[in-house]
Length: 618
Image 1 (cartoon, rainbow, N blue to C red):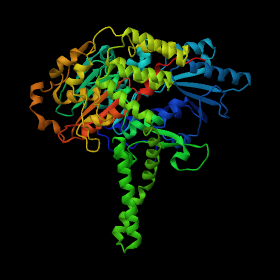
Image 2: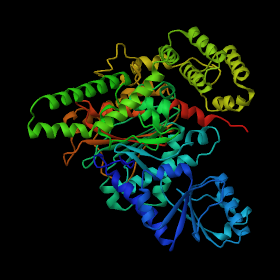
Image 3: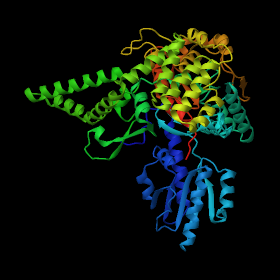
């Protein structure tokens, strides 16, 4: 199965975005005449695998290498570096150039920064005395389609850069990515923002419109009607329509809802990411897990909508996935028994052969599910799930702290401990001073004082803090009905199935935004921090009033050309697969008038988020 996802069924023409990115890269390489070696930073290489096939690059006579500390081994006289704007990479490239010079090699060097060049990087090249030997350009890759309903801005460290390092460059990147979407699908007439970071993104976007004004046709025929930017600690929404194409953009930053990513995801795809790590739409595993006996060999398993079985089961609660796979395997076994013991018509044989074509997919997911079960059946995992629900329900304060203390003394994986501690801190507006000081001291004693910087970072971003005020969690939880008793995971009627009883706060907010808008939520919004803004850009036809929308439920299902309205939900700071599953569930519900496209700085889990805060030593 191809790793590049099939985007034919996307509710928005994401294929055009990918094709433009392909053309941009091919043009860069064609303009450098002759045989060349393309050296790609490894993580960026994973991103490019979602944009262009390696075989296509090789057709242009290009040698491919991954950037490393080692010099580039090639006979090519032209070396092209494709790298993100990271200062540490400039040292490696400079070292390569100096090494070539010392060997008497004459080469032409090119650096193309993704998505843009930065002065700090060029200064390092000047300090290393190689800047004059290198031709510098940009490859403006701001948006990458991960799947038919997911866009990524590929900002792995956006949250840490903004909240810990004080570097707001990622906010500019987000605004630029949205601006590029506008250049394809039309300018967004309505912009609403809630929260400090979101207001900053909205301001940057306004400046971009002033500096790079769009023509009148882009403004008149906008496919995107409303941009709603929300920090993930302050929430959300509004409702608008457009006579041509209704698209709202809801941006949720991780400050608004740090609760959801700290919970263990219980959907199939969410669990794969929790335990096996999904990167660039695929997961890398020992081949033996997939039933291939090649000792020590790794294999990549693509995970996108091109896999029809994955598309069917990816968003189900894992306990249901196991039952679905059993039923499909049993059905295929029965069909095989019938085909070998009775006379079948040609039509029946043809149907059976069609089923056999799905056998590789079924084998793949049975192997994956079996491997996941080795994690989910562990008593430690089940106990952690119970504790997560206890914390969210705010039902037993002392038991939670005792459990976390016990985890520390047992020296369970530090990230598991920190996830529970963050979950407790966020839902309780911090820890009482005596508990905070005690647990901090115990963490350092058990895991080492080298983690002091990590704990300081957690305090800096507000994930772990001393209690200074009463928590609003109980009020928010009740008002938004975040705890759903007796959740039916097999036949769900609420998004709470993705966490077996907890409805993700972020998605509850998005749902309310779509159904009833901002105004009915004023009292809840007051409990959530951050400023808010609302602007109507000049040059657009006025949208229908809020009251008109409230009474126009039938009209919302379809717009002028018969398509469903489209909502673009953007998460600033990352989104989990469980939240994506919840959004897909909402979109598929009867009576829901919208298709959904999800945009994100990166797909994250509690593990990956906490890891971005870690300070490494040595």
